[in-house]
Image (cartoon, rainbow, N blue to C red; front, side, top):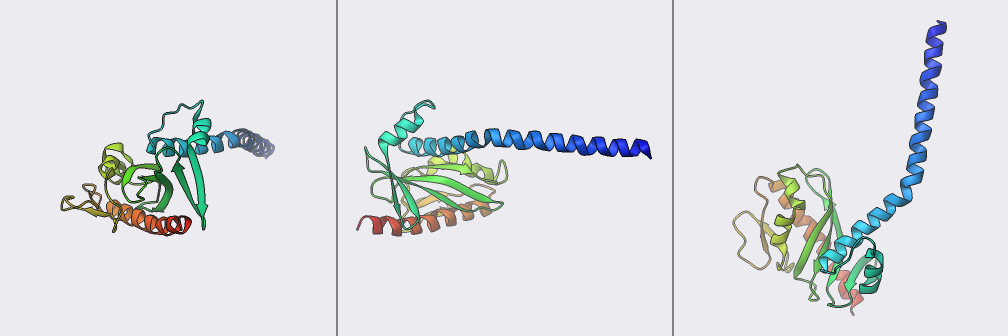
Length: 193
């Protein structure tokens, strides 16, 4: 009985010590994690605008070339040099949220670039939605009247080929882009009236 009590005390002490270490590590890295998230967002926006930067000057380049506008809870990132616009989009994919940055030309309908920040789709199938070769198919595509992700082969200015073997993710991505564009488009028009 005495041996069991000693073992239980040891396990409790070990659990408290490791918990304290993990909480301490979390507290020490919390600020760095937030800075990294901010840098990831800024780099996606700057990449969408094709603005050169490195990780030592990313914040300065961002502040010097990007204007942040807000309207009715929607945030827009405007390239001061070209007038092109970017915004963060989010929606439900097949297996989890898909979050990214959509960059449009100054006409607010032609896609310049899409970057995926987070996704939980099946690797090798729906996960292709985050890969640059697939996302590059959207460059030059029109968001109006609405984007159409099709299995039949893209022939219209608003069409993009679906991901082979990932119909659910393709359909979800189409809905995410269209829903976010509609909401941001209304806010953009209100901002520019």
